[in-house]
Image 1 (cartoon, each protein chain N blue to C red):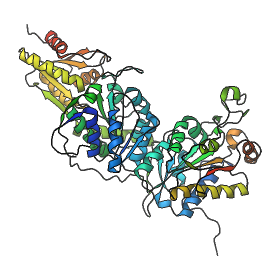
Image 2 (image 1 turned 30 degrees about the vertical axis):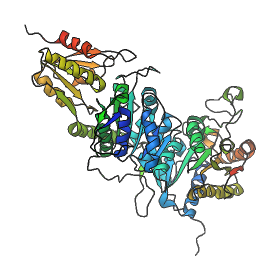
Image 3 (image 1 turned 135 degrees about the vertical axis):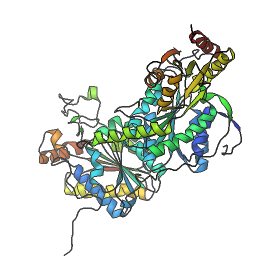
Image 4 (image 1 turned 90 degrees about the vertical axis):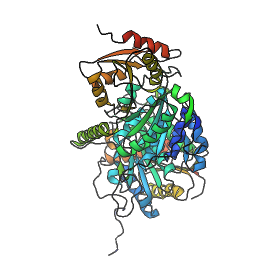
Length: 247
Length: 360
């Protein structure tokens, strides 16, 4: 009997700590599929960040370095410069990458480091209990914006995929979502493309994945998924913002 | 670039550090400009590319220390350098490196503080260096050069000790030692037995176990176990790696103790004291962590009066007090760091003369 669907080799056979309806598991799977399909597991090093993404090493069956909060692109830079023959990816949330780690991501991207960054944007700090993030949407209530994000005081959400695409050294930047099968398939394709950029030494590649966080949004999984479709995608458009090598 | 030959060359302290790093096999340097250590990144930005190495002028001190973390995690010998405000910014990364049991060399060419302070020599970051500096309760290896030759030798030693004990190592210099020029013998890298880096993150080769470099320990008892393991390692360091220099201590009735550039000045003052007929000696710790406690304890068995001299309001004196016998006394003479506060040999000689015990 032919087996059509199985766990990617690059993922361990363990239960994750992710909440029901959280999209982290889907992103994990797509990253693992890309690693498997490109046949790069034995040379891949993951850089885990701080937040719900920190347990990367427990789920991915690849070697992993755990970075301080926000510093994954700097850690990946050091690792890649010392081992240019390795495939190095960071996996970071929005608080990690776009708040405390803004300097590290902008500069790693601007140097054109040959790394792949997977950015999971769920508009909140998941691990610490749903505080306001730099990507929290206008009016969105969180545990530290109880009256809703006030753009006159808190600023507007960062659109990281667009922002990084403006840098000359960025080779690939795209935003994907996981709210329906079509978008998942597209995300699968683009995540693989991002890794291909590194395999083919074409430069810095960036994927922003819009993700749900039912627990911290105070929603059930279906409503949270619907919020991605109805509120997030219109504000954070899904697109390939840069694809310099047309991979 | 000067290649390592046992012939004397005339070098700045900071250049000696950079040269020693290359001789030690360091091929990755990450730094950020700050006075008085910028000669180090300047030298390495010129020489590393010629050797096939990597030089990055990082976006920040935080970026630089984390690049060091990443390079170290994949097994490279790597270094960063800074001073005062920059070292403060690096403390987050140093704590993570300590927590992840990562080697790596950090050069601290101390300048005056707090805050922006000044660019003159200081020893006021002794506590920051020897107490760990960042959060969580850890130590790092701290070596204190008192000459340009030692800038060279101790930088090479820092790489070896750091690799052997799997913890960051710091060379704690100051702007006097960093900026002054002396003749140096650039000795070749010592042959040291180094443990294999089996823990290195290298990509999951077939059949190999997954390697993880991390500092997160959430399981019951895991964090405590880590701390006890590190305590045992610090103990081993103290037993095997303490280094110090004694001068005229055998018959001394007063032992001056100082480290780094202050010890240089104190050495002259001690010689002046001997010339004046006083039995005065010098005890200079070279490893500040591990602090040579046993050597101090032994000295305090024979000499009951110490004079601790620092370019600060007194930090190392805490360690001296803890190390010496209870019936010995430590006096203190210090000048807070800053422009114009570097003591002269005559000034220190006066302190020796004033405090020299007179037996009734």
